Amino acid sequence: MFAHTHYIWYLHGILPSEKIATIISLLFAVVLYCASVIALKIFKRDEILMIPFGTKILKVLEMLGIYEKKQEQEI
Image (cartoon, rainbow, N blue to C red):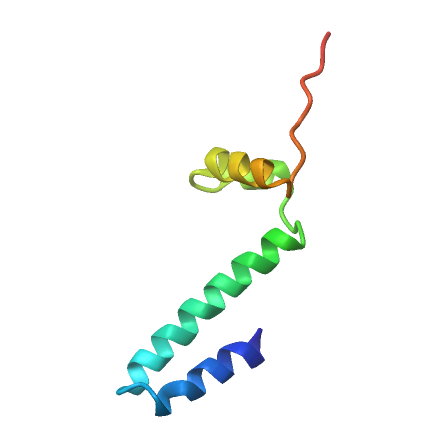
């Protein structure tokens, strides 16, 4: 992740300002971090439900097939 972010920061030669390059590299790092957390399934279902909009995020992840839908247990 560091290598990708650092590479994007080096694009400041193309961009008019180092501040813009820094903001773009930070945003890229956040997106890359979130994608790695989701792809590696670091969070359990309960932990996803604890974050803001967790139920909506979990529904999207279930629709994408990243997390399996929880089966209702009959008593």
